[in-house]
Image 1 (cartoon, one colour):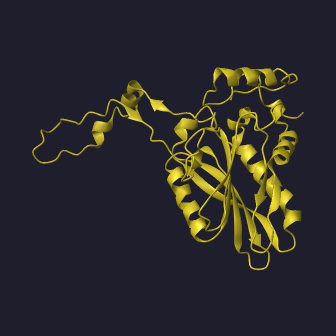
Image 2 (cartoon, rainbow, N blue to C red; image 1 turned 90 degrees about the horizontal axis):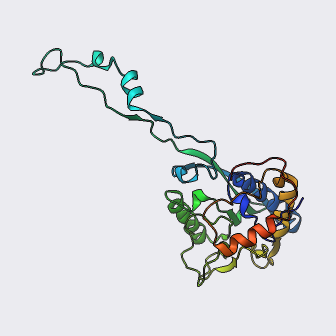
Image 3 (cartoon, rainbow, N blue to C red; image 1 turned 180 degrees about the horizontal axis):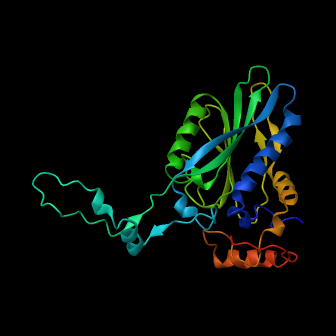
Length: 278
């Protein structure tokens, strides 16, 4: 069953996003491969990113993460005999103990997120020609935002083309330029060492565009149909069985007019066989 939305399905921005991210990257590489042969190849580069700001995504992209808090009573109970382990230093009255802290909280640990980049490389010497980045929330808030901006600067200085696909409304965009008008989604192409960036701002009702993937001179750009790629993975992954289209889409909230439009399209979907929180 196809998505009821002409562009990005906003319900994919929640707990399904890690799966969407991986599948879309693989589908992009698959579609590019026959267009790149024989001089170039499309490879998937997987990097483990430490998501230190995951608290913002609890209940959205990470629905199963729980922040464990130890109550004051439990903390005191767990450390009831803590005084036995304290030494008495010179000058301290014998028999007096340092009382335990009234509250003990678990320190948050960074979660691991697998960031997938599609890399177009020259077939003979493996030279990186174009990087295709699918942005995730971890790239759009610090510390991941600053790290990603440093990465895009390195690629630009090295003359590598960078195609950025931002289909997540949450967070800050890493681009060094601001759009003249807001757009929830964006595709940006920065050609190697160019002093400008090509932009495809996308509204909620816009289909995903056909965009160029640049290669080395004198080879021409090859086309990438993002709309067809998204439709393919939506069908193959059966996302319609995991989305409750009667629920509210993941944050940030939409305007009243946008919600009316979303509800009008969601009403056209068939029965929901398996629902989930988004």
